[in-house]
Image 1: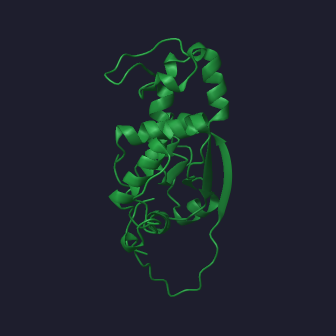
Image 2: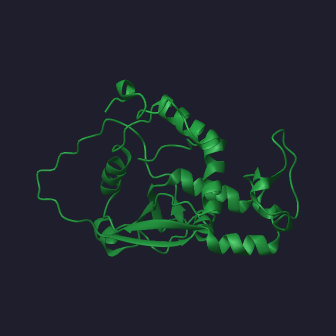
Length: 219
């Protein structure tokens, strides 16, 4: 989620619940859909590729550890609501993606890169018997998806899951409105807060946290 002060969307009509369906599946399955072109990563309201290499590597770390990650939100452009609002939409056109990503583009790009073998991560994250080949880097040996053994790939391909939410919105405008709601609700983390969390992760305690310095707590 992006951090901002929020964007207020005006609507003079009573609000009704949107058609949404939450589910989960393998991260590899999502990556395959991206590689096959079944998910449009570039609807007009989406931003470009924004994550750093470190952010992408950390997502794979989260998947390896089983840490919960935010759901990917996709709109089903083959749903009846889309066809009713877009009569010229040709479902049989192979160039038309089934889904448009409303939220989670960076995660989807990262999954694609990892499972296609173009994103190396530290080899130390895996047991020696899980690794077939490594790549030397200044930070030490790294491994790609293709550098794992077939058994390790089979295990991670099953264990690494990604929640997803499917919408059935009728228009690109409706997609953009949901994009704004999902991406303008947070407040930016202060650099000091992130540095403190990193220090706690490294050493276990920190004397600079807001709890120990009430005068520095902006709440």
